[in-house]
Length: 317
Image (cartoon, rainbow, N blue to C red):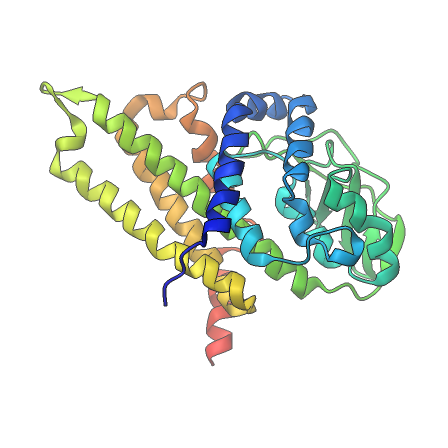
């Protein structure tokens, strides 16, 4: 089976690519990592105007309908440009807030970009709690609306992913939230984001090996370099149909398979990019680092590779 984007999907992806290229996302990411959210919030609003968050919201709540394929297309581009913020968490929040009263209360603002939601699993940290406007926590008794972040944000492996513990308590929104549904959506868009990160790393590395020279020739002409890049390209190309196939079925096993494959392909591409860039690849000031750290952070987000493989194997048992 071939999973090719139709002209409408390609036009949507191209429009997001143009929007994000003009936004100078490396500058936005660095400001975000320092706690300056002004550029990130402005970019969030532009993404909302482009319909990104509305793709996770049903039409009756001012969304475009739950469209996993289109959402995957969008998140590939968000990953390609390493956009900061609780993007996955906002999609997961939309999947959790499906009860009519909660949906009417929260989803229209989420679709319009007025709400930036974050979500903390039990006894865990919330992503970008200092920037989010809605703080959700999965407590033992259900889904709660947290009063807010407990302490200043803590740095993580990826400087653009700021971790915040949430204050306990708060309003109980639902004693039985659809956590499995939310997890499937979160894993799908994480997989798409990782695919975009991997593609950006590969593109940057190919461009770099064409201009870096040794012994008077570009290092990209060396057979060993070609093999490393070919392996990375192959892994990413095999990932793409898994991601979009999972978006079509939304089966937990298909989504888990896509997530583990995409994140491992992105992580392997990051290792190749780091090696082929040499010493400059270790430099935080060099833009490549923004994608290297994100690939590593996404690797374990919303389920480790072992957890995702268990889901796949359990479905086949």
